[in-house]
Length: 555
Ligand code: ADP
Ligand code: MG
Image 1 (cartoon, rainbow, N blue to C red):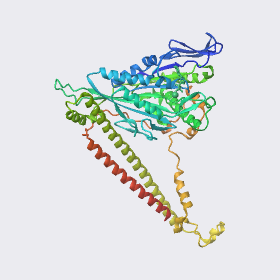
Image 2: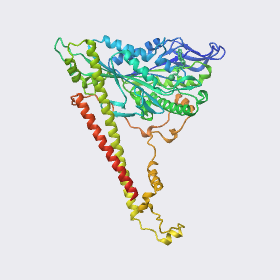
Image 3: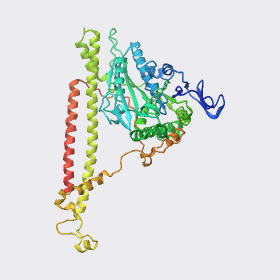
Image 4: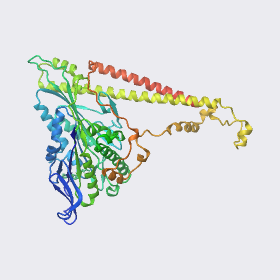
């Protein structure tokens, strides 16, 4: 078992120091509140793994909080580093940095490639993706328009975001370029507290696969060797905020509600995890997209650092206390960390092996640079095919599910229509005694009358009954529209919303042999075509069902 590393980072003061007022004092790994010079406020003093004062650079923050996790990721351990704290406390600065003080993401990318270079006995395959969670929707930051992605889970891949673009990369510059382009697609907004406030949570993800190199000189092939796969998440959360201070209204207010809500869910998960042992019960990872994606980092198999950023100004004392309380709880979390060794075709490195070797043979004698470029291109093409196949397969699955529901709905509708047509029509006297006068041309029972086809309103009424079914949100109704930042503060203090009733536990990632599949571009294309035609068949069937559904209403 390994504890989560929790650090607090105090950003530089915005205004001239107020010597008479309250101040936060950093002393080694402890942060305490003081009333004027050296008069401690009792009970408000917290120890952490590290407390970084305002003079600390991103470089030092990286050395202390991320370097070890990055090194372990190259060796096959999952890792997560994330920044948590109120708006304008320095989360984005810590993760992204500035021109003269590069942040953790930049330093991590550089470090990973330097480590890969040094590890001469293994071959590596690194792919990256970049997503944001904005208003509880997942958007791909690498591809504009690739939005509202869904989270799925499979035995092979664990929890994953279906349809998210991944890019295979072979140099830090390539990664940093991709990130730069992705940043342009991120949601920012202006609030009173931060002119360019991040309005979304972003997750930059690197998947690192590696395998022992074949020893050509000794004629030893390691083709059956296990492949190590690790996932590294570098997360910049949107800041929690108090509406009164940010002055948010309209779109900003709506965003703020979503931000506070998902941070609450994160605090809820942390609070439950911090209980540890048997009292823990279910952990409500499924209550938000953020906690679902961070599930392995928070209660599973990942080395994790949480950097809690705080603002030193006196007006932010309440938020800072809240963040420190959150951090104290997070300190109690332990994870069970192990190297992910995979024997199956879940490793891309393995799936692409045959094709790459074929290309290598063909290009034997080519200039090393050309070979590298060709291999990278081929790898990315193959990955693109796979991702497209996966996306189509997910759509097909979803379409099938909807079709099943529609089928049930139609059956139900037919039963109801049968019931109605089996009913004895009431006597005329009975009708008039209820005050329903009717003339001969106006049949009351629209569902039995052919003229109903010309009666669109009745159809709308009938249909809207189906759409009145409750939304499938896993959250209880009381959480549907809460907005207030006070609940967020309560969460920081350890309040736990009981959202367990609708929990499901997620299966562990399976690590065992599966029959291998031969991969080739033609195979991919064939499979994609196959899924496409299945999808077309299912959507055609859906259209047909819709027509039948209309007919069953009209007849
Ligand atoms: P957040 O992401 O938490 O909302 P930012 O990282 O955007 O906050 O920081 C708000 C402002 O404070 C930015 O202008 C940023 O440059 C500055 N800032 C934050 N932390 C530091 C730091 N450690 N050193 C220098 N400037 C900082
Ligand atoms: Mg930010």
